[in-house]
Length: 307
Image (cartoon, rainbow, N blue to C red; front, top):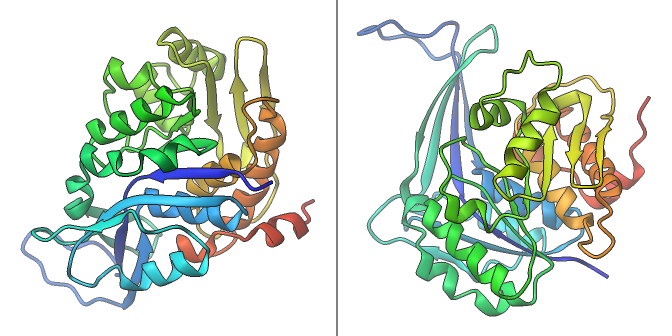
C-alpha cells in the first residue's frame, strides 16, 4: 500500500550562471554560459522525491503570481502529486535562488525567499484533513518556523509521525523540537546545531545524544557517500552508502528524505530498510546534473545496481 505523505515547504526557481571567476567589487564580467532556469526549493525537491518513489504525496507550498513556477507545477502533476494546497501570493514573487558558478566549481548563491516566507500557519490549517490521514508530515526550514510548527501540531494531534530536515540550519524553538519525531540533518547541519565538532571521533553518537536530550526520539545524520547514521533508544547503526562517481550533489539530501519517507513504517520502525532504499535513491541523484531533474523514479531506484 502506498504511503501517504504531506510535505510542507518551499518552492523555488534557480537561475544559474557560469563564469570564469567571480567579479570584484564594481567589476563587470562576461558570463560564459547562462544555463537557464531550473526548479528548486527544498520542499519541492523533497515532495518530488517522495512522489517519484511511489508515495501518495500532497505538497503544501506558496508561489508568486508571476508565472515563474508554472513549469514546476507541470512537473508536479506529472509526478502524480496533489498540488491543490499550493497557493498563490499576490504581493510577492516566487522564491528564487541566483547561483554563479566559477571554473573551479565553486559557487556563490543569493536566495530570495519571496512567496515561501508568506506561507502562513493558516495555510497549513486548510490541510488538516489531509494531515489527519497521512503516514508522515515532512518539513524543512525555508519557510517560516511558525508554519512548520503549526503543521507538526496538527500531526501530533492525530498521532501522525513528523520528520524535520533542519535546513538551512538555524536555532530551533523548543516548541518545534517537542513536536519532531524524526530529525534528519546532514553532517554540517548536525555540527552547527549541536556544537559537536566534525573532527570528534564520536561525532554521530554525540550529535544523536544532543537531539535526543531535546526530546527527539529518532536521529538520522546523512553522511554523503558514506551513507547515514541512525540512532534511537534501541538502535545505533551506520548504514553504508553506495559507491558512485558524483557529478552534482544538489538535491541528494532532499532525495534521501523523500525516498526514506516513502518507505518508512512507524509501526514496524523499519529504519535500516528505509535508509538503505534512501541511500540508493540519493546515489542515483548525484550522478546527474541539476536538482529536480536528477531525482530518480521508483523504478530507476529499484533497478539500480552498484559496485
